[in-house]
Image 1: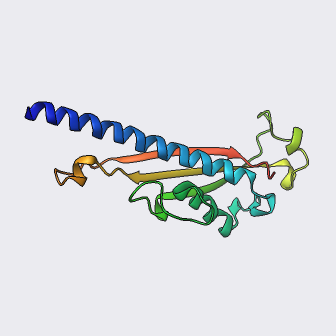
Image 2: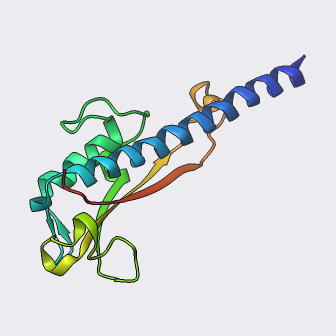
Image 3: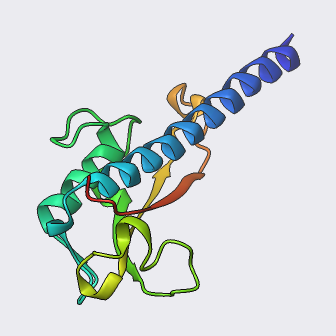
Length: 149
């Protein structure tokens, strides 16, 4: 019976780990898409910088699902776990640089690409029961080209 109970609880914890990993992946994907839809005035390709308010909103979308911020999607996900960076792609061999909707962009057709990364500590089921703590991180990254729509 103890072995069966350990296997059952292990299966529950493994399922919780995969669910948490999925939540983090979905969150950074949502945040990068949100950042791609913000106005072009929030991005400066000459210095590869993002307006601080817009960057905070993007981090909030990743962590909470709300640009204004609210309860985190996962326990233990704090604001410092999420980073937002900007790279301006000027490589004309890419199919979208200087073409289509990007040809009239400021900064000579450079395409701003927002990257959202998160590293969140996994809170195991066994740790909640006081049976030990699994030290694992949930990592995810997503990027999207800014369209400013």
